[in-house]
Image 1 (cartoon, rainbow, N blue to C red):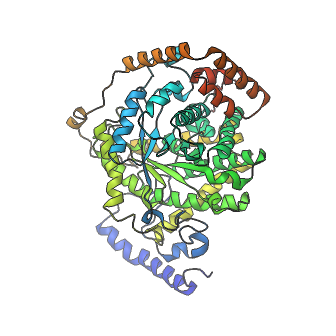
Image 2: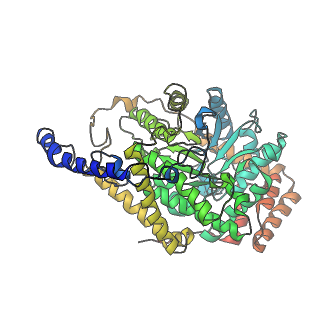
Image 3: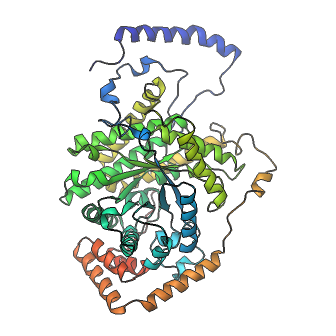
Length: 566
């Protein structure tokens, strides 16, 4: 197909822009100097005064964009997008014990949430029980405590697990939490083919950013691939991995780094699964992604569009995928937690609305909007409802969901999408030369890049090159609104004691012979290099605790201690 713009017209336009910069702009600058010497995105990409067809002169519409639902999927993976079905409104929930979380999930469902999302406390994230000495003071703080199958049963009491999908932000212990979930659904009478949702199950980003690792890199990836392989064969509606850029971005990465490192993680996982003998079209349709939507509006939209185009190319040209669904980059988005401020906290409602709008304009499949009180603690019902209503207003009042990819054709957006892609490819090429993302992580490459980017951003804020309202501009000495924020209150000590009692009760009531046999079978399977998922599920049904199952695997795989990277 010919390029969109006539070459002669573009040349004339270039000359006109040069004349405008030379003759018109200087006159305006004398009267109205620009606010800064240089304007950039958060990734440091310079932003010009104006963009014209000359900035995308080699733009081939079908090669770069195509139509929604067609390769390369830049404009969206579905031909009808939100005109047919809105994105899933999936609020990140979970705090205290399973009783408190069950109540919060039901509250959000009553107010229009269309998908569930579970946050786990730190002991659960690293696979220890609430009566472990290392868990003291941490039980139920940043998410819900789920050390046993019994806890999962309480969380979903009164919730039809065949009628909802659930996202679980869990990584090293993902096989255990999925097993708790599947066993609970079975008890409700839900068949495997109706169990829907997502396990994050992304070990590489733990080493890169979040640091909730347990096993060393190689066995950590092996365990994650076990879960994917088992899920693809047994849970047709389950997304067994959410390849996560969100935590990479929250750790201080730029949008370009988030894009590049997330796709590089995905490439590594695809190779691992192919090396197991799986056909790419067997598992690729169930891969999903998770991105941050930060405050630089157009950069985020360009990132999402570039991600779809790049992943389609990777799957088609690198791995020979044939199915259209195998080339889709399906992704969940969360607004940027790191952009929220404790200063002037009600400003966070505005930030979240802008970030959510960028995610929708970028074509997300599901969305979590952060609550304005999150710089202080787990969201209150009041704040969580405002965050949910933010999505509903975007969906039902603004009209942005009525047409697909409405910013397509913007000279700036198309140029920025191309620029994001080009910069991300350069990172991916460096990682490929290192031998792939697993080797790059072991060398500390992405970790160093993120650390340097985070340092540079903080320096820019402190030196006034980047602004955060209420932090380094429009600062207020007296902040009454901070004192008046209605924070969630709960008795953490009482919840911790309750969780300890429940673990003790579960241990006393289970069939000891079945429990012991299940853990021995798991240990032997891990030693033989088998897929551990059937054995973890067996142990979960025998009411082995999270700590016991993970402890058994630690005996075989070992425990990771991060080396210094500087």
